[in-house]
Image (cartoon, rainbow, N blue to C red):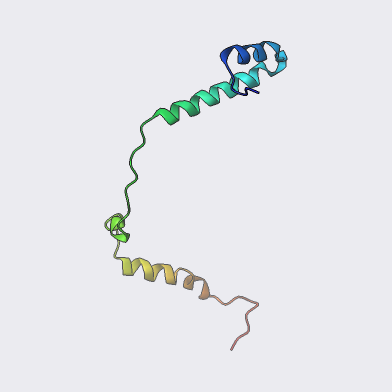
Length: 90
């Protein structure tokens, strides 16, 4: 049994398909052609990573990193100024 499709066999199947499915068939053919076009594009070679040194210098900070770290640690301390009515006094 030959399962390979030919233009003639596909054309016969399309002609016998119900009209209500023609839009779906057309969209699927467009998708297949899109995938085919993607496969035909030349692939860029994948650069082998040499470790974390590839990422050095990628982060540009406006502030000193130590100051940023202190701010992040202290961001919730501002809320401890007023005691909540539910807190027990020590």
